[in-house]
Length: 271
Image 1: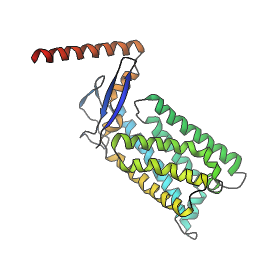
Image 2 (image 1 turned 90 degrees about the horizontal axis):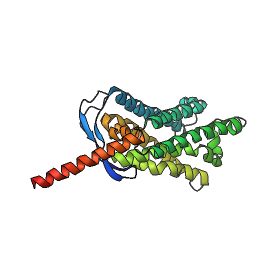
Image 3 (image 1 turned 135 degrees about the vertical axis):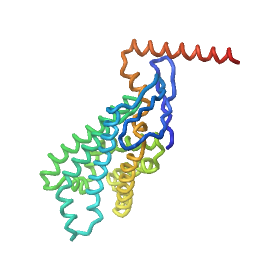
Image 4 (image 1 turned 180 degrees about the horizontal axis):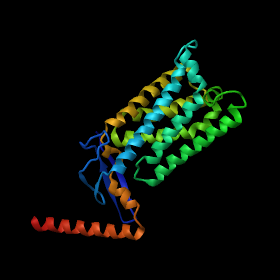
C-alpha cells in the first residue's frame, strides 16, 4: 500500500510531516491492539474508530451500488423490464447514493479540517441544488431529476457540487493510498459532467466514460474493505492534537521540542 505524506502546520511554530501507511492488522473490523507512535504521541485503535471506518466504507458501497444500478439503465435495451423498474425509481437511487456519500464525507478522516468542511459544504450545496431542481423544474415538467438533467444539460450547475464532493473524496483516496481506480475517477467524473454541460461530448463517448465510471466506482468501494482499519484512521494523534485547546497545543509542542533537543543532545554525546 502506498504511503501518503501530509504536511501539518503546528500553530505558527514549525511544520512536521505525517506519513500514513498501511500495516498488517485485520481489515475486517477487529480491533487492533497495537500502540502506534504518531506525530504528537502514541495512539491506539479503539472500537469507536472501527465503527466509524466501517460506516465510512459502507457509505461508499451504498453510493457506488445505487449509482451503478441507476446508471445501468443507460445500457439496457428499451424492452427490458428491469430498465423500466430502474427508471421509475431513479429519484430513489439518487437519494440513496447522495445519502451514502454524505455519510462517508461526515466520517472521512482528513488532517486539514478546512478541506473536510469544504467537501461537506459542496455535498450540502449539491443536495440543496438537486432538491431545488427537482421541485421547481423536473417535477413540473413531469420528469424525474436524472432524466431532467439529461434533457437539460444546464441543470448540471445545480447538481454539480454534489459530484464535486465525490471527486474530492476519490482524489484524497488516490493521493493517500495510491489507488489507481480512484485517481482515474478524479478525472472521469468532472469530464463526464463538463462534457454533458457544454455539449462538446457525443453520446458514444459519454456512455464509454459512464461505463468506466461504474466499473471503477465498484472496484474503488469494494477494495476499501481490503485495507487495514488503520489506513482510514490515519495518524490519530494529529486529530487528538487538533481537538486540544490552544494553550494545551502550545504546551504539547514545547514538550515535544524539549524531547527533540534532549534526544539530539544524547545522540551527540554518544558520538
